[in-house]
Image (cartoon, rainbow, N blue to C red):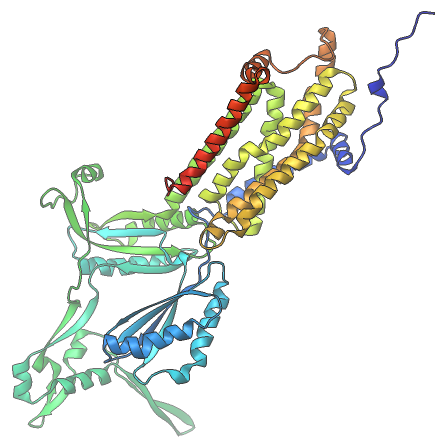
Length: 594
């Protein structure tokens, strides 16, 4: 009988074992990969839609101003008797990093700043307790104090500037107050403020000649004004089974009420305030001016209205409405809600002739920067996939193209659980990790492709052997990257929480990339490449055919060959690497990098 062909010894190899290979086998032989892909992409979509968007990451720096009133005291007295003792007292609080103070006549402002990362509520409780515990040390000149906490969310995200060539700054402020009152009802609005314009006031301008003639002093007028705008409950009495409250209502409702106030008696006749003073209901005395100016080009773009001009630019009286958001709210959504409400108020409250300029829109700038980074991320992924199409093939590139979004989706979802926002640092971390995320999927898909095309084993068995073969370097590379980014967790000061998204997201994406390389990548590679074995046999391909494109091999050989053939060139390459490394370090040592 003719000799029978000997079986390939590789086919007699036992199946690779181990926990990880067992997991890979389960994903290859079931539909777990489909469920995992759907779950990951759904979590990523939910994270993108629900995670707040901001320009910068949230940094917790507990800070508070203590305003201390000391009427009549000079700046020197305030510094020695109020500010300096209070500074020494606040330095005793645990977690305090800096204490600043400003002393001026009648008051002192002491600012206490805690270390970055200290709990805000606990820090404020410590501050209140320290002051309350030492209330017996307060000097007699102090008449009271106010503690005002300050945080990053107090900064406005939207500034709306109202200007007009028809209304003055007093009228604009009255309009702005009404608009601000209605905008403050928008969801997730916290602190609101109006800047500029003159407030309404009832001003009493005394006429000295009439005061002398009627025998009324300024002190009598002051006491009369203090006692007029009050309401008191004098008591109650019972009669005929009824209890009656006795009250005095003297609130001033109009400027005419002030003018009719009795301030004294002359020759048995009452002296009214209108007899000795001029009562004015109108804008306060100007202390500063706020105006908004436009260039010719900008005004021409806005339209032909507002034609009052002087010189080379147009300026108008203006007031600005500043609106801040609540902590953790989405800046983009809050800003859009404010502008939607403003569009409604233009039809209902804001009169014709009043123009509105959005002078700050933190939501819009945050959205633009996030969109720019997202487009950069998409472009980076597309570039990597196109490179893989040229070097490995479209099927292999498709495997990596699926693995990368899964890794990023899971990372964004974990960011949402950890309380991070989508900001420039978070997205930069994702772009940075893109080059690391594709490593494990490329390694696995390339080795799976090589084993399947070699035809020594059936496709599923070849996939298992390929994954098991590169398992140690895949895991070690992931651990090496995580170890490299661990030091970023220990950065102190302001940069610590600022760079926290970087130190978290890069290890996260790499871990999820390794997870994909051991679950989705083998399954999808097997699904797309299992017919390569039969195709190779039909076309008469060698079992040891090199699947790498010839131009890649030629290019690699042209670059590496000279260094393999020549010892001096190898030493020159090593010297150049050391020189470049020393030069990069010198940039920091010589202060060329700020």
